[in-house]
Image (cartoon, rainbow, N blue to C red; front, side, top):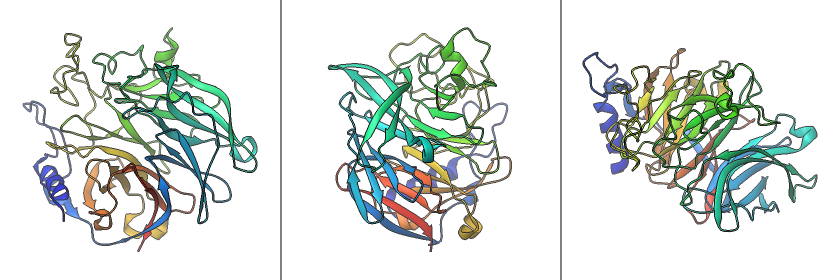
Length: 393
C-alpha cells in the first residue's frame, strides 16, 4: 500500500466515534478497528481514454454516456467509440478549479433530449458567475444547443477556486446542487448567497421547490437553499430507497467531510470567524460547534490530513453482494476510492480502501452509478484521462 493510503488509515484510526461534552472540536468517525484495506473485489475496465479532466458523467437511454470535461469540452461515449459533442462553450471561464463541471441528464430526456451542466461563466475576460445551463442534444448526438440558463448568480472566483459544482436529481423530482464558497469568507453562512450551500431547485425552471426549509423568505436565493455552512461540496448522492442525501466536501488541510444532509441545517464552516476576518482564515474547524452549537457533525472526516474527496455514489444491485448499498467516494489528491458501509440511519460502520485503485489511475473526479448497476469513475490528471467502469470481480 502506498504512503497516501497508509496515511489515511492512520488518520481514520485517530478519529473518535463520538464527541464528549468537554470536547473542543473532535469529530466522529468510524471505530478505529473498522479502517482497513478492502479485499480485492472489483474489476476495473477502461471505457474511454483521451479525455481532459473528465468532471462528470450522465447516462442516456440506449447506453450512451455524456462526459463533461473541465476545459469546456463534452464527449459522447458509445460502445468503444468516443466523439466530441459540438456545443458553444466559449463563455466558459476555464481557470483553476473552474470550467465545465457537473452534469445532470433530465428525467424526461427520452422526449426532451435535455441535460443541464454547471459551469463558470465569463463575459469577455470578466468572471460573472457560476451558472446552471440547460442544453438539448441533437438527434444524431453530434451537437448540443443551449436552451436556457436554468440558474444564474452563483458566486465565482476569477481564479476558479472552490467553484463547486455537483447536481444530482432526487427521487422527489428536485435537483440538488452542491456549491462552493469561492474562497470568500462570509459566503457559507450568508443565506442570501448561493455559495457554500446545497440547493434544492426545480430542474426545469430553477425555481425554489415547495417544502424547502426557507421557502417563506422574501429572498429567492434563500428560498432555494436546502443546507448551508459548506466549504466546497463536490459530491451529492441520494441513497436508493431512502430520502437520505450524502455529500462529500473538501476540507482545507484537514477534515474532508462526508455529510448526511438535514433540511435547513448549518454545517458549520465559517472562515470569517463570525464576520470578523475577511482574509478567509482556513485554520478554523470545518464544523465549528463552538460558534454554531447546532451545526451538524459529519458522518466521517479524514482527520488531520486531506484527501480532496470528490464525487460519491451508491453501489446498487444484488451483483455487488456484501457491498450492495455501500457508498463509494473518490479522491483527487488521495488518488483512491473509499468504500463506506452505512447502517440504516446513515452512520458509518466501516471504511475500506479497494486495492484496485491504489497506485493505478491517479486523481479521481466523477463517480456515478450507471443504469447497468456498474460504477463509473473518471480520472482527472489533465492528459489522456479515462472513463472507468467498476463491477464486482
